[in-house]
Length: 426
Image (cartoon, rainbow, N blue to C red; front, side):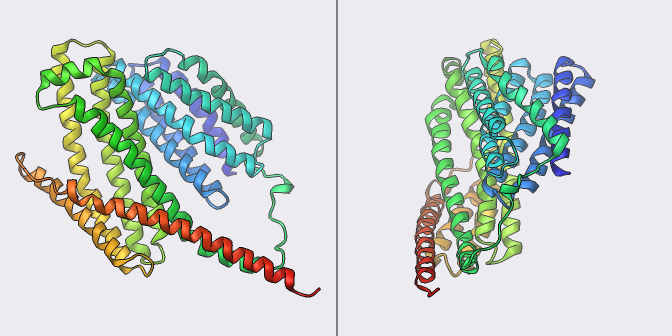
């Protein structure tokens, strides 16, 4: 039944967005696009429910990608009315990039579960890869996105019809077989490795976030944006593609924030379930605020895309960039609270060293002080987070080291169990 609902939403969303985009600028068109966004989010939730136990990594990636797509498509409607077609097009291409990249592990998971014929899974993987490539090319100014989107669009129609007919129906070969001798030992090892997998996901997510955020903020935004509106306008006009890439990188950081939040929740679930859950929702809320802030950067990029006059970019575009910074600063209050809770959980955990917990809590306090200080006074002179962020780096490194050690121990335990089984007399 879950698969049939997903299939119905695939087909209905396809029709809804097609008609809605044809009626762009009208109330009925906007309503249909918003309805499409709701169905896109529902697809992510239903697919997550189906895949979260057998393929949790693919399930989370697809859920977050579909949520990002729904948000960006809805933001595109708002930006179309308030800014223009350029901003709406950038939001749409970013949404397609999110859909394409997030659907790659989804197709692999469906193939491994044997919920799709292999040829159809390969078609879907190739179609979504082409969709992501076309969206990235469109953001860089190459008009090939529509052609490259055709294979993925046709796949979604076939996939929707197949799901509508039979749902997520694994073949007999995909059903769990009887547990072999020693399965209880293997299950125990797998249970112990849950924390290791969560640590690996969180550590890799934090590492990728550090790279993307560093390139976007220090490599692009800090270089292009200054306190002088005229100078900022000149820099933006000369570096439009770099600005678009920075926006995409920051939105990828938003998606990673959500994934890291729930990976940390899984890691600290045994320490204190309620606080771990609250910390995950706190960081998720921060990610939503950050995404809203990024829509202001999309608005500024849309003015550049539409070829607006320099005076309009200097006034309206610079105002959007200022709004981005202010909203992001406000959202960092939630991020600071999240880190304080993670620090408390780490302090309570028997696994995490106390010094790591202290540094993470200090990092959270730094973000909290800077954000509140900026809200209280526009002339707030201190940037504590520029120093205290070290706690995040330490947590990232410790998680990766813990994951590596956990994997090594798990292999040793499994090899030891197999060796004991071999030595048992017949």
